Image (cartoon, rainbow, N blue to C red; front, side, top):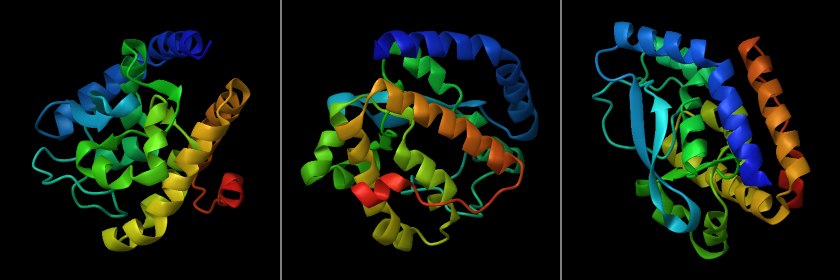
Length: 208
């Protein structure tokens, strides 16, 4: 049932938002030298590494992989900030859903550089399900984690909470929960685009 929903969602998403894909592609090619798409190595189901597709929002010479993208990160070009804020940069991952590497809802896939040190102990079970476009942890990262300006502080304070939320989803996943998270994701993106900056912490944190 989940796979059937994923396929239906991905096909409809690609058809409906095809103009956004085309416009974004053209603008990136105009404003920033280099390819419009970026293929990142990510760790997915059972530790399988796959190419995760994104619209490029950083300069080609952006340097080594970091644990997260901090607030006011100087690697991001101006239009890149807009597509990151609106999550347009993640839209190419609809292709990953079609290919079966990802699901609509699931833990966000981590870079291979960071995965080994994050998925330890009980958190190895995060890899028991397919990664997704959205999850309780990715929404929390979007509303709170991206406000950090210090990577060490982010790793110390935020990453443990993020991992707890990812594991919470693995233990409580259901079709209705997925639908709730999809609707919540759309609403939070709209609110952010309209200028809202302060959000409550996810209720799931109190239960994990």
